[in-house]
Image (cartoon, rainbow, N blue to C red; front, top):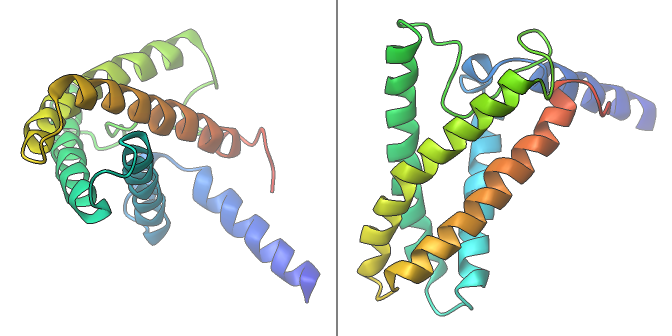
Length: 167
């Protein structure tokens, strides 16, 4: 039983992570990954703001800023790629599309990360202002949280996507 479960998890993980975000986003696993990252973002905000604000209030504000960022990224991807849905804002690629940690991959990732910050931080500042959080606090917290979730989580997931770590 244990071996069968191990093979099943291994098969699901390999199939799930070794596809582009264009495919993954359409699957339940893609939404589960996005939801987990959003919960991590909210939790980090909650703890970095020293638990002074309600988790639910932070959750909905971050959901809105992430949705706006995602929709704008989707539309920009369509525009920049000539209508091709193969590259979403979150630079999720697999070994089928690009060499891991190539110069182009790193440049693309950094550009997308900076543009994501340009979209999300002003929205966060506006939304968190209503909670009484100062703009400098929101700016610094947003930078820290996005660095952890975008760079940290993406890097870990890329290790699976490029079969560097095999389950």
